[in-house]
Length: 258
Image 1 (cartoon, helix red, strand yellow):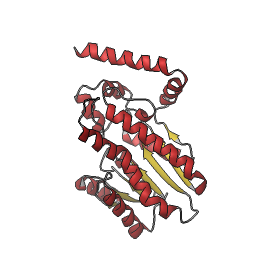
Image 2 (cartoon, one colour):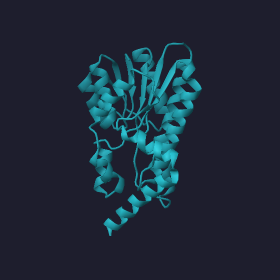
Image 3 (cartoon, helix red, strand yellow):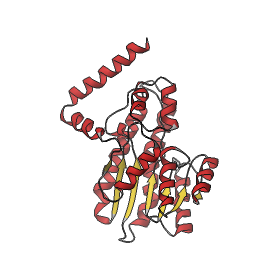
């Protein structure tokens, strides 16, 4: 992939992806809500910083316009920006809306701006969507994250089914715990899921390496934690048993928290 855009690339998985692609000779545009973070990563890798909000359609359109102006196009777009908020049915509407916009609508905005350009020719293109194992399973302690990541996965599936024959390969990156600020904040707040995920958490560069391997093929799901495939199979094959196990984990956490 010679021309790459990565959103949420100021740190974590996004920064690791940007560094990996740059090390392989790609021209990389580094996008992040934090201009200083985008500038720092871009400076490290010889990339181009384009700060902006992935959840804002105008910013996303400007990002893609810049890629065409500076790089002449995009071969791989990594829609990596995301947000994790602890919450339940009582979480305020504005939080649900923010998480929906970042975790779901950011992908819609990307495809609205990108697909008309990509569909003009028959050259192969790739869209990598960072979803999360929560999109395949769930996440105790965060209804907004679990719900929006399920929606993001559904959108990735729809895109793959709709456009694969037109030369666009959509892949969904679904890691469990990754040692990023997002996981650290969850652990500090006493999240049951964060504490469990921390035990098997991977470094961001390990996840980026798994992505690099997956880009050599076209498998829809990219699972840096291979055990997620088995959990997903169990969930589909016996949802009652699987949900019972998840509820057992929830009860254990509540008992330990008291």
